Length: 93
Image 1 (spheres, rainbow, N blue to C red):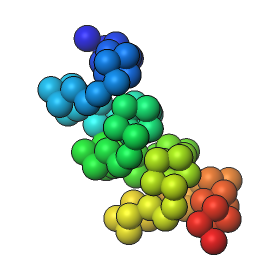
Image 2 (cartoon, rainbow, N blue to C red; image 1 turned 135 degrees about the horizontal axis):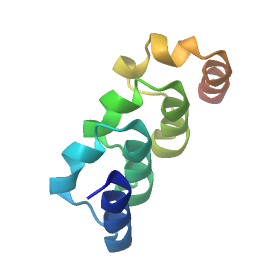
Image 3 (cartoon, helix red, strand yellow; image 1 turned 135 degrees about the vertical axis):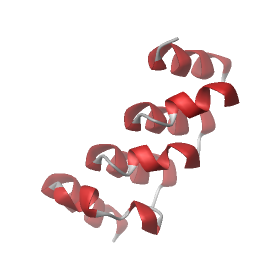
Image 4 (cartoon, rainbow, N blue to C red; image 1 turned 180 degrees about the horizontal axis):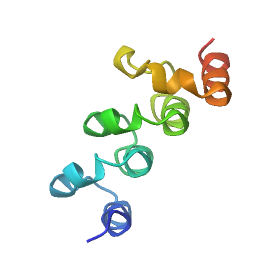
């Protein structure tokens, strides 16, 4: 099963599928979508992958957490991308 199929299955069912979460958690994009669309809140298992991508970190802060990221997610990756660092800083202020 691909990540797309795993995500689609969980979204269609409208609930978490714990046996698929380890695979989903390794990918920033699908971790974000899973958190936003299935869990409708933080997906702690996927936060390590999300924190490695400035783009998905910003969107996770904005539409899942709806505020400041957990401290461990504030890292060089987020702030290495000037565009998303700026968006993030403006959003949380």
